[in-house]
Amino acid sequence: MTAKTYMVRTFGCQMNEHDSERIAGLLEADGLRPAASVDDADVVVLNTCCIRENADNKLYGNLGQLKTLKQRRPDMQIVVGGCLAQKDRDLIVAKAPHVDVVFGTHNVHRAAELVGEQRVAGRSIVEILEETAADDHESFPSALPARREVSYAAWVTIQIGCDNSCAFCIVPAVRGREISRGFDDIVDEVQALVADGVTEVTLLGQNVNSYGRDLTLARRRAGESVRVRPLFADLLRAVGEVEGIRRVRYTSPHPKDLRPETIVAMATVPAVCEHLHLPLQAGSDRVLAAMHRGYTAERYLERLAAARAAIPDLAVTTDIIVGFPGETDDDFERTLQVAAEAAYDSAYTFIYSPRPGTEAAGRVDEFVPAEVCTERFERLRVVVERSALARHRARIGATEEVMIEGPSRKDASLTTGRTRHNKLVHFRSPEPLRAGSYAEVTVTGAAPHHLTGELLRVTAPARHRTRIPVAVAT
Ligand code: SAH
Ligand code: SF4
Ligand code: F3S
Figure 1 (cartoon, rainbow, N blue to C red):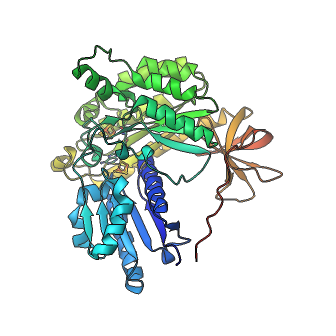
Figure 2 (cartoon, rainbow, N blue to C red):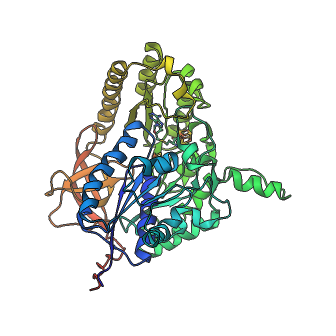
Figure 3 (cartoon, protein in one colour):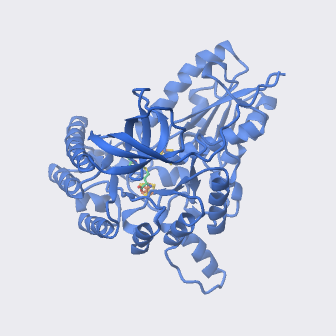
């Protein structure tokens, strides 16, 4: 019998992508094999996001296309998981009855079982849990089997959920309360990854700087006299010191919780990359307060200056929202000023999107008109690109270490690598370089979103095993 095949489509953030790796791992553990295309997949999983409205629309657009496919192949199973599934629940099957399975963010570990159960039941199954059991190790995506997208760099979940209440954000509603994963479990996983040939890890959490707060509080409640200390800094150090790790990244720190100890760890642990992603969201204190961000622009800039003073040659990136309800021209001017002063290497910029159920979505009277948002968005893009280009030009002539990713997506005659600053560099190589290898490149050109360079030498070949394609059983 031919093995059934699957395809997972991911719509969201890195956590969502990491969940997809787990879903793929679970399906493979169940005997399924990756499909070459959606046209011949027996199981199609849509791992959804609902951070902005267009993320919602994408799901329903995709389901429309899959409907036609399912009419031709009624045996095909359509599965919807992730944050939008957590939010919309039964609504998905009501809107799209051809969906076979819906699961949420707290039961990713059930993905393969639910697919099996649906086949037997023959009717749609919707399983959404309200929350993750704190002691349930299966709930940490990193504790499940995985089919990693690349074999030389890996995501490692250190925390799930979020205890903040940013007025615009749906994440706490769909990902639940903040739960930290055990310190030793994380370090053990990194060691196992290194043994597998991984040399770069990215630690994932919605608010990584509060990592461990819940663990220490739980121990205190149990009567132990432990000091609440910034465990994230300790974690960075422990992971960075794992033998064989060359690069440690993390995302996202919250500016209000960015502690000096974290900066010290970044400055002193050689493997931790000189890159800080510090989401600003807005430059006006009035808007920051309405967003419940817990810092002022001045405080933000002070913390950034301290980080730059401690970590030479630090790259800084951010997230910014324009058009938050009630944002005036003056508020927006302040965002432009702070963005210019912060001199970002790059920024993810978004137009505010009301998310039903969040506090800001109720401020309908103060919504900023769409055309004003578009204009602000464009002006912010210009400011960010100006600093990005200036910072990239300043690197011309420098030698950078890059990790090879493979042929450039735009021009296959070029090779693409990523610097410690997380910047893409495109360059020519006389021979193909294996992804995951490290090389030195001299920067020769700059653009707002990438660098170009010349290869000097390969410094370390990739260590991971190449995945042997699994033959499809007949
Ligand atoms: N936990 C991360 C953010 C995760 S969401 C943090 O606090 O940094 C990623 C980004 O999406 C946010 O930083 C924010 O800029 C943007 N975002 C979240 N909700 C949004 C909304 N309703 N409209 C527009 N952008 C939003
Ligand atoms: Fe959302 Fe704020 Fe939590 Fe980030 S910190 S996930 S923006 S609520
Ligand atoms: Fe990520 Fe989107 Fe969920 S940004 S946490 S997949 S809502």
